[in-house]
Image (tube, rainbow, N blue to C red; front, top):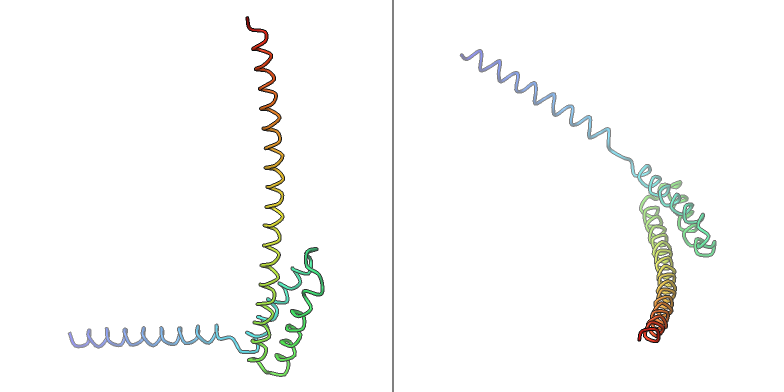
Length: 145
């Protein structure tokens, strides 16, 4: 019975050791360097800037502060100042978010104007239809004995 217990204990210790080594290796695999993290963040915001630059509603003057912040972030990454790079990337993100919010608000404003125009047109059609109904009722009343 004692040897069975020892075998079970060794088996359990072996499994625990294997699991801890495996988890340690996984943790090392997903560890990202500060340089990689900062570079990736700059790349994401640069992509957003390029996408917004394609919109005809956004002009170059609006994107100039974003481009300046991203340029400063790239320079900071190159010299190893990752904290400054993160701050500049965050600034670029906030500026891009503001531009996106303005675009969304402008779109909803134009949609509102279009809906008001449609409502006006429908109200005009309703008024015309009511007039036609009144004329028809008057004709029917004249013809009825």
